[in-house]
Length: 84
Image 1 (tube, rainbow, N blue to C red):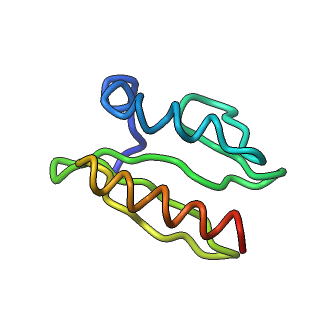
Image 2 (cartoon, rainbow, N blue to C red):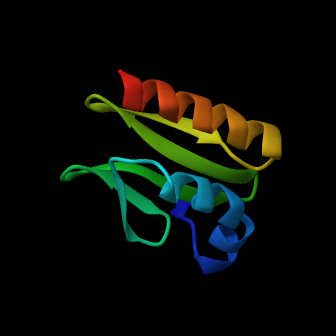
Image 3 (tube, helix red, strand yellow):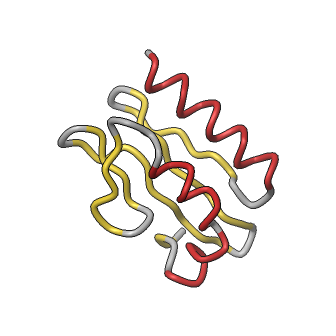
């Protein structure tokens, strides 16, 4: 699964805009967010859809983000991680 390119990220622009509003996250490269000095969230594209990898401690969890509903679920997981 390759990292999301610009065309894939274009389809996620609404989600990226929401992520940019979150305190504590810094977008160092388009679609690659850091929390402090650690990579925290980035995106992949695959023939089966678009996915986000979200850091939780030392582990990564993969979230499908192809549909609006899936994007809302990612935002919920992200909020829980930021609050935790």
